[in-house]
Length: 104
Image (cartoon, rainbow, N blue to C red; front, side, top):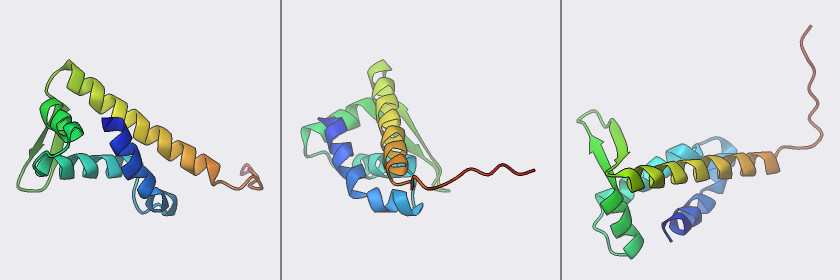
C-alpha cells in the first residue's frame, strides 16, 4: 500500500528524472518529508508516521531514520525501489545507437 503510493508519486515525476532535474532519491526524500510534515489522513500515511522519524536542524539539513527494525526495512525498500525505478527509466530511454569509443 505504502510502496504503491510512492510508486504513483515517482511515476508522476518521470520527466524530472529524465531531464536530470531531480534524482529518484531526491524525490523519495522530498515525498517522505512532505508526508511527515502533514497530518496523516490515509492509512499509509499513519504507517509512515509510525515507522519513520525525521530530524531537521535550522540549516534545513535532515536525517530520515526508522524508529524500529521494520521502519529501517521500510526505508531500505523505498530507497531500493527509487533507485530501481530510476535505473529502469534511464536504461529504457538511452538510445541504442550510442557507441563507446575509448580514449587513447
